[in-house]
Length: 231
Image 1 (cartoon, rainbow, N blue to C red):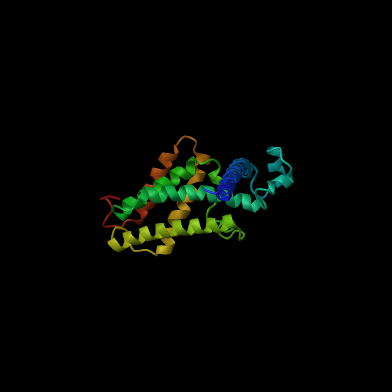
Image 2: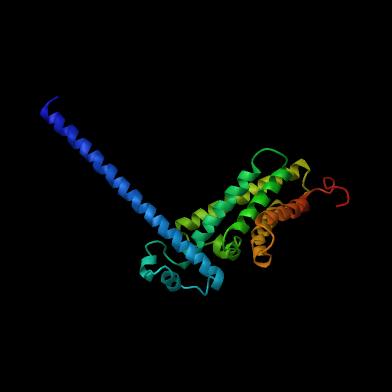
């Protein structure tokens, strides 16, 4: 190999090593930024739960974290984005648990039962979930930021999955005929509201709440011909 060829190869190797080091540095910075954002979201969720969204200021959140208010703007644009990011994280976890539990096998009523039970159990187990009304105007039509669009998309996907599942049950005769949109909305609204039970009932576990919600909501959709005798 010529001397010039060796030099060119060494230069390429040096460039590759430099690029790899830069990527590692960016990765470490991203991880630090992610951890800091997690801390901010946790404090914001606690403050919103205790004082309410409207009564909580960014200054209070920054003070709790021993940050200057200006430093918060490196992580979020405003207070609404904080709420949207909290809701997005909760919604993604709930939707993933519900759709995974429902699966794709079995009768519609059994799959919907599993979805509702998982949804409510996860929602009740999450800290400060009671502050989130996932059907509220603020969260349904938040500002047009990236997390807001992701939140709307997550909600839309989960709603559609639930409505399709109810539709399967109606078509098969397991569920009584009903307005599909109304039925889907009522199931989701009731499941979301169950998190507030944890505020009033400190004894029942999240699992118990999930089972209770599944029994009531799925039972209410059942065709009279499919319900147990005496119900």
